[in-house]
Length: 282
Ligand SMILES: C[S@@+](CC[C@H](N)C(=O)[O-])C[C@H]1O[C@@H](n2cnc3c(N)ncnc32)[C@H](O)[C@@H]1O
Image 1 (cartoon, rainbow, N blue to C red):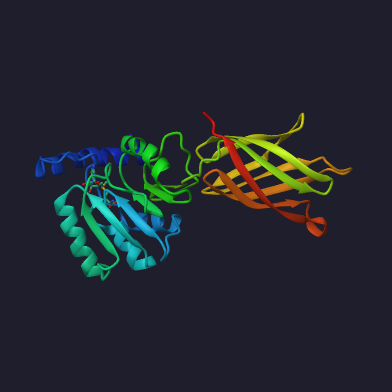
Image 2: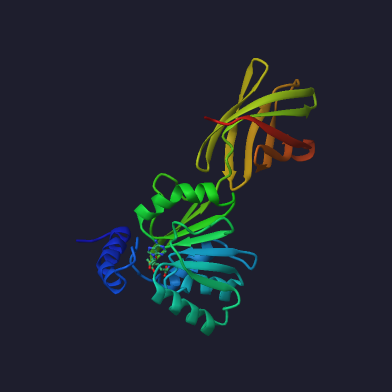
């Protein structure tokens, strides 16, 4: 019988589970130790576009290989957490041998209790059920724009922003800002000022919505959310000729600030744009 790569990985993990439980029976491991192959480590870090300004947190860091590669190959800093004391000692030794001991730390902690808020990149090789248990915290506690990369296992109905397969599946998510709710904005259009109430519905990074002005309604076309960057297109029908309004901005709490470009090419004009949230979706 041919196993797909996801099932094969779960079988390998299940087979490995007995050993760490026996070795450290006092600890309750949520995932057995199975190291990520080096080529998959490379692909995880490439997909997450890790760089020298990043702070990487590896949840269940094993022998430290992901974080050590992030520090050695990309100049990143970070922390790995693992419950297994042998893995922590091994990681500290490996970081020293790789010459990155000043950039990384390894802590014996439960990944479910570790404060993840300072991460700009989170790496994981866990299990589907563990990813799903972690998901609410990842969405709530990570800053919008944080990249999350997982070896082999997905996040249920939170679709990845990118998926890559190099021997194994690697998934990338960019933590989305909360944009759902009703927003108010006033735009200075060629035919005069117009106030809009924009209603946005959100499921993870997927968004959709409408804008109301007076008794009329305008669809939001091509609505996109990536981290804290939101963009969509509305049609401006305020003058004799209709034209597109290309709206894009950065979400910070209950404010969006950015620009609106009207039209294209030689006829394009640009105005600053600010919207404030007047109600969150309940
Ligand atoms: C599949 S291994 C991944 C190791 C490493 N990240 C890699 O990709 O090579 C999972 C690791 O998670 C650790 N682990 C399991 N449950 C944990 C928990 N609740 N908190 C911290 N680490 C945990 C295990 O000890 C193991 O080293």
